[in-house]
Length: 372
Image 1 (cartoon, rainbow, N blue to C red):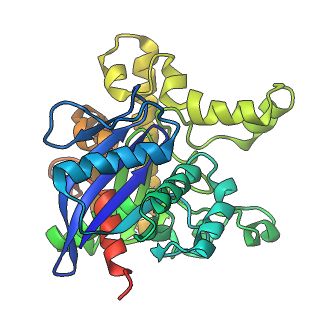
Image 2 (tube, helix red, strand yellow):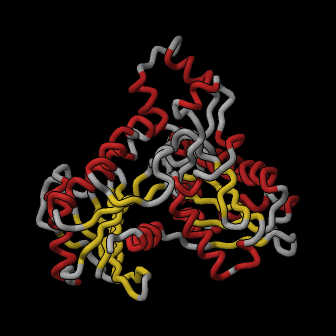
Image 3 (cartoon, rainbow, N blue to C red):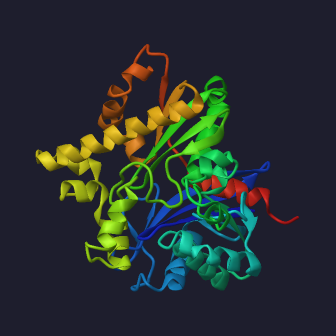
């Protein structure tokens, strides 16, 4: 039996093809479907050049996914494909673990779109497309919010009237599939660290940090939305709510304009005026680029220290995701600010780099909840 794990983004879809062996999903292939290019193309691990999928319009997701499945079938064979697992950003309060997608479940996930208006729809469209192309396949959903669902109420609650909390205005946290993978990897490879107080920094174009105690999430920097926490490529991170009131009032901006600002024109891009990519900023001599990197690493170090307060100390700091895994200068700048906390050679805090794999978690969870 084979499992296809799908991780939908706004401009690409990550795919992992797995087969079930002894109750575990074992990877066969990894690919990225690039929706930005014209025409869209598939990048298959181990193949140097992009592979055309025979579809010109990236907006026709069903046709794009069909072309992608056709390439995978020709090159790898999909005769045994029985499960499709999806990364879904928001599970709300109802979904605290993976679930088989039924009509009722799909309706509940649609109702959560207002809580994640930019991140939820791509996954739902992909579920619909897969259902139309392979109606006999079992589809499952794995949630970024689920890993944080057990956090104590005093962590999740905002200082707002209690009825708002009861209506769902609370801290949910995201990147949970990545944090689950890191927690599982620590338990397997570093059990003595896993049992302690760990902060994981998931640093990519979206960035957040999570405090783990004995592998369990006890606090994370993202809150009600994926805008919160540390600065990101194009998102601002934590922001005084008064700024929004000003922009929407005296500033004369509409809600749509503020949403575009917060999701697409803030963060490192807004700070530098050059790019949201830390590689380009590190290579630039522009003072604004240097300042953007300084603010980015400063806020991340602050967040590590704050999470250490929650944990009552710190035993290990783990870097993961694109920036965290591949940019040692960013890691070094963060750790330089945390020397007093022990995040330096011989300082008592272990510093690790662990590649994350959200698709592996999705595939494992899909296999675990498959019907008999």
